[in-house]
Picture (tube, rainbow, N blue to C red):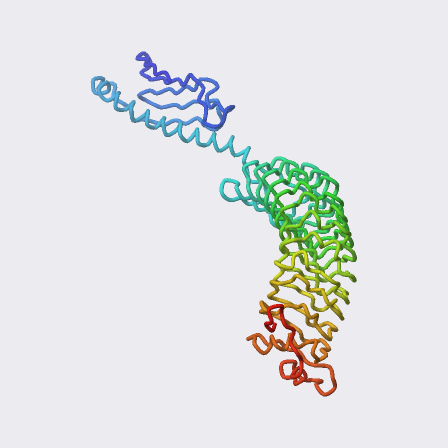
Length: 442
């Protein structure tokens, strides 16, 4: 900045010669042309070609021409005051300029509202019909309850920093190839309660960090082989309330870390051998409210660490040998209620040693297999079954006698025991308990 005094016109001129650049804005120059300010003893004029710095004039008290000596002595003081005014004007101008220029690049999209310097962009139920343009700095985008129709290729490609994306209830029918291109940091993806029926091949490309995927409440009838393969970190997959009819071999290829798989309330009739081979680390598998008529022994044979399995409300009538053996040391919760289940094979519970919760209510069971272990059982439901109170239920009765938990279970036969609670029946008084190899009763 250059200061020049001109005694002829009793004024002080200030020129801002070099361009001034704001930090972090490489292309922004506030003073591309010299900024001239004219200071005189009569007035201050602030001139700029920039629209943000409007012309302003500040009138100063007239100095008496007859008191030249006094004027000279106060001229320096007045100049300092004027300089302070100039500084204020420059600060205001710079701030306005920064907001104007930077704001156009990182502006909250209308009619959304934003928080934390655009870290969170909320566009919930605002009538959007297409995906808005959103800055790369954004971490969470909520677009739920809009009318997007479909997710096009690269529709989110500018949102490279996105971690959480909410697309519930957006009337989405189709997900195009590479719809989530560029979202390599995305962890949470919510697609619940849409109308999704078509998922193109490669739709989930780039979602290598995705951990939680919610697609429940859609119209999905099938899943193509390898559709989830980019999701090497997927932990929870929610597919409840769809129309899935079959699980093919390789459906979950690549999702080796999947721990929770929910496919409740679909139209699942079969699970092909190998359909779950790629997710052998599953801990929770829910298949309730489907149309499985036979237990999918081969499909589940590679599962190793399942802790909870829900097969309730399927039209299964029979559980075969070794049904749960591959994960028998880990299974703690087993839901087999409301199935019209009539019988277990004698070796159905072979290798099952950790069972704590077993739901068998609302079936057609008469007896239980002899290898069902009750030693760790804490929650057992047996009501609404036509139990035959004979020595086949002796181990159950023994457990009831020693357990704090005494489930409701009524004898349907023999006739002299009909209507009695198993725990009160006298039918077991002459039954012999099986002995272990060490001779202890169990």
